[in-house]
Length: 238
Length: 316
Figure 1 (cartoon, chains in turn blue, cyan):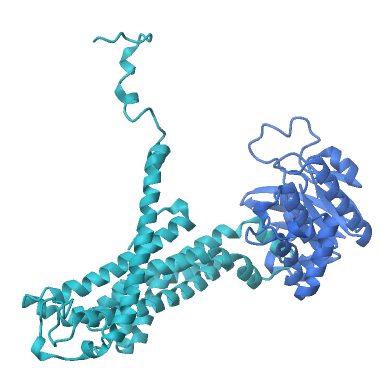
Figure 2 (spheres, one colour; figure 1 turned 90 degrees about the vertical axis):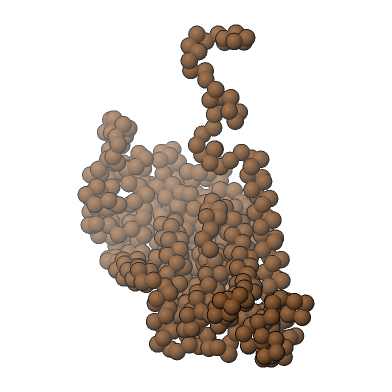
């Protein structure tokens, strides 16, 4: 169980983006997270993928309470939660080939080059990348192809939980469908839990087992016209 | 007025402003220059790079070959030919001990370039390490290291260099240490700034999430990204180090007298100038100026190619 309770987090002192948010993702479950722009969806994603230290609250992965974040968190805990970001262009090192991008977590875990190459080939096959594409650099491929590589990278350490932060926002319908299918296959094969963040309600209706809402999306008129991101009072299961 | 006034009745605003230079341009456009001017500037930059490269190659050849070919003549003391002006036999003339100055200055150039390269390498490695550490780790270590940088910068470089050389006595190693120990700070700042700008990129988040350790992130993502900047500042440091070495040797604190650096030659010969022997100072200095200009011209060309947005606000 990947769970977050009473999360208060933000970037500037005195202006929390999240204020007392609870979230739980059970293994084998796809939890959708919806909400208006600026309500803190991505911040929550960063918190549960151990990339952003919350000001208060508790994050636990399979019963282990996380006390330290980013590099300070143990690598085994970090790789338990995979993450795919919204903008593939920014989330890969422009110097790497796609093959190196996908192999990076494997090599970081101490795999030797031969087994890493084998796993990369298998992952590339799963997300639909050809060998020719793997030898290109990020600026030579499309956003969709790059996002496939990012998904392959996130799946490489066989994470128990996968956080997809607007994974499909930049992509066309067919690529979206392909990537969602890859994620669902991973859930079926390994029993992983998925936190699927999107503002696309119709996608979440198909993809997720249940959908949580962040922010005042339910309240009329809360979404627009505000300068500051709305304070959240916890998620409500739909 | 022969021309009829245009249809607009308010003629006071249709002044000559619009006729100068073919219409109004934004400030950014005016600063950037017209395309034609930009093309001319690019051509000049390419010419500068080419000339610098050829010049530096020639100087390197001179520094390598001339002392080797004319060693006997250069070291030979010939009191029958003291302070001779430039002639076909002695292109740069001779100094107060009858040394052939061309050979001696070439040997000096060799020593100076060697010292400069060693200094540039040492200070770049040290600066890159400190800057990367400060930028990547952050927090109190960053603050501590940057205050150290400020402290080193606050002391005049030449003064600090003199103290260091005085501690170790004049030798090649001491000169290299004294210049490197005072010049790593620029590289450290550049590398730290670059690392800081990289730190918040999502691909580092992805690497952390993928289980990469701090050292791995530094090695695989941060250092490769700062290599162009660091290498560039190393090249920019070369001419500066030549000047420093020359200054130290001129003051009698640098290299021992048997190593003919440009600074030593200039320091030894300054009394000869009073006797009217201008060539003793002017010609070795010209060699020094040429070497510095060629190196910085090359570095400027390289910088333009690597970092076009910081086009050549070049400090020598």
